[in-house]
Image (cartoon, rainbow, N blue to C red; front, side, top):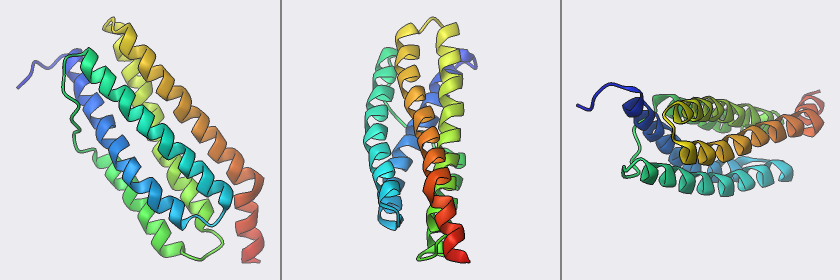
Length: 166
């Protein structure tokens, strides 16, 4: 087993988020198909494109630390995706579906924001400035996606769910 230090913890966490991003690329097309709002479909499509770029950045970080890009099962992301699938199944055709999917997508974003923030902090303390810069690009995109989802929920999706329920 590798020495238990911050460098190996960084690598282990990098593998975790790599797995999570791969899982997200498989879930987003399902969410796009299930979304009722065209704006939400477009938001999911944009995030899928960004996620593919983010995976490329992660692969660059793996290269910078001399490791092959390999994921490590992330039970947290598996659970978040499972909850999203449950929302899709339970609320299919209901006015609240899009609101539920935004909530699930934001759970994904919040997990990613947490992981990327941690990785950036560790990369900086380990003097991995190039890795930190790549991870910071992704963190900025994840934060912007979270904010865009909040705006979409507050500007139309949540009120549409309430109006259709009345």
